[in-house]
Amino acid sequence: MKVAITAGGENLNSPVDRVFGRARWFVMTDPDGGNVEVLENSQNVNAAQGAGIQAAQQMANKSVDVLLTGNVGPNAFRALEAASIKVFQFGNDIVTISDALAAWKEGRLQEVMAPTAKGHGF
Image (cartoon, rainbow, N blue to C red; front, top):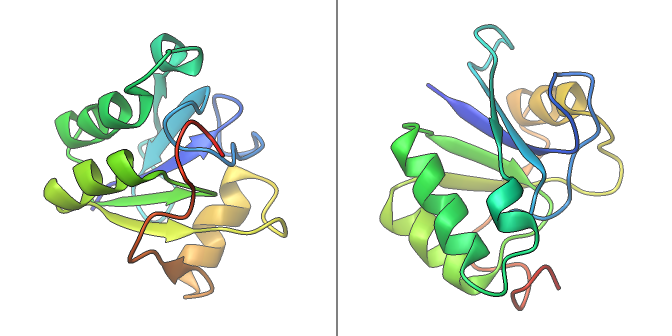
């Protein structure tokens, strides 16, 4: 199983990024935090449109099973859903990638069944 977390940096101690499509980085790992892979998302950070769909395609291309993020817009949500990627939302209490991964493993993150933002990071 591969878990992706929206990140503001390149390792498990980095802060989380609270948006999906325009997150600076995606840190991908197995549920135990081993085999860490980092994917830069700079092409989508300032994209005029389509950032969420493009980021979702990257997740699908990397065979991600689970995404942990703060918010996901409607287009991104539909693309993730079509790729059978489960989305779990973290709140302001989650600070680092390690925090998000631990909260998910402990069952403290709620699975998202609909978009949590209107789009464009809002």
